Image (cartoon, rainbow, N blue to C red; front, side, top):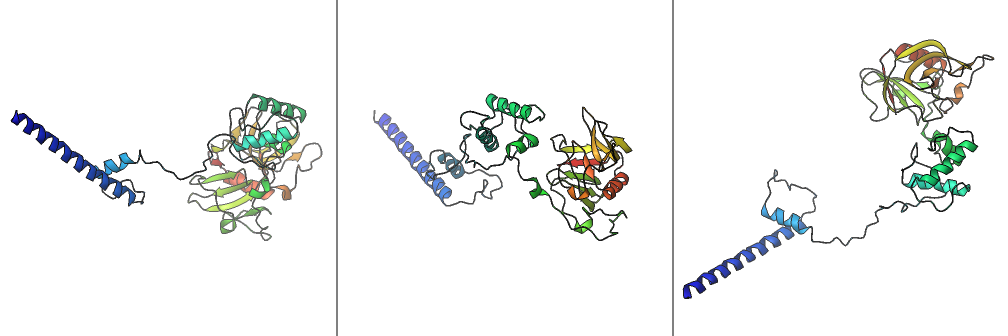
Length: 325
């Protein structure tokens, strides 16, 4: 009987020792956690995991952070002013967030949408957009792009993104010997390339800034110039390739001649590409002035000054990458 008691006593003593050691490790773990705010996951230990690390990580589950935060999590939490502008190029059913709320506020302000702005592009919002598009003779698709947003006054100011360089001196040329237009610059005088705009010999077209760069194989800027791109959302972003060229062609509606056409995108109604400012077939006048380059005025193509169109005609070989941003 005494032997049994002694055995149990030993077991109790061993259990107490284990608890004591565990408590010590726990204290060490918590102390290590509290004293190290470096944010390093491995603590500089080459991936080795110690007991104190395991305990420290485990204890974080049970320690509540009492710091008050102000995360915006739910749709509708954003504060959207009445004079807001949308930050998304296209809004459609299912979209959520501040841009949708901005759109809905504009529709409500014009008595086109009932209720309060929810921040979710739902069925009633689409119905209101379609009614607007029909009334204003816009393309009817129930989505809000540039034209619909302009009518509602929620499209961002475009000229803020347009960089206008000083006109070059008369007779100024780029590194390949081509004359510069009044809206062109070359080499170090040109605005810098946008980030993530590809590598090697290519064209880069930034829609927001209405600007094109011709880049050599080493990444140097040969020249850069302003264009007048599309009023619509049909200039698809991504990397395309020049697939055909024409000395002169005709617009899809037959009303304009398009000199020095360089095509890079096919659409259902015709090609999109770079060309010289179009000429009216009825009277031979130009559709716009060179001073208006940098403003979206076309139905899809990118209009250029004469000197820039002549340069691009030579530079743009078939297969040349065209990076559209």
